Length: 196
Image 1 (cartoon, rainbow, N blue to C red):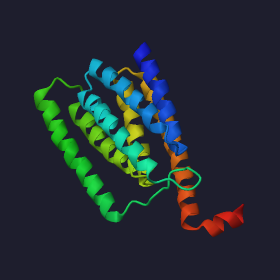
Image 2 (cartoon, rainbow, N blue to C red):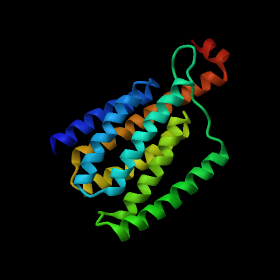
Image 3 (cartoon, rainbow, N blue to C red):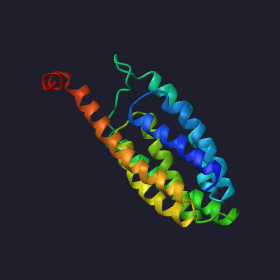
Image 4 (tube, rainbow, N blue to C red):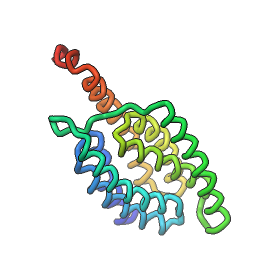
């Protein structure tokens, strides 16, 4: 465990927790976290993961903008459904993007685990885009990805980062629960008021 890994873990944990709370602060905190991990992944030759962090940095700006324009009167971000067509296109884009990136990493670099790293990277971009669009389904995809990431980081000798991703699974489950409740309240505010 390096000081860089420890700092990246703490900042990223805070960023994901803020995301589950649907607060705009998740985006600037997340930006710092992904830049820290970009450096760390470069050092351990997980190049697809490194590139993912820089793509995440761009998505942090997009998400921040999207969330600023989609808040409720209470200041919380409004949650949205993922349309079936968006689900299909997201999953196809993730699979094809992972194959293309995996091929590039396998043939052009000395990347460790180029195919797995590339698939995780591509699907993480899909999950991030869904989260930036405030779509509940992003949490389901993050749960699946984070479970695989735990094993990857243990294999690469990053136990603290593996622990962070295990915590991300818990946070994603909380986000799924909280965003699901918010979506139900948005769709039926009278029922939510009666329950209070």
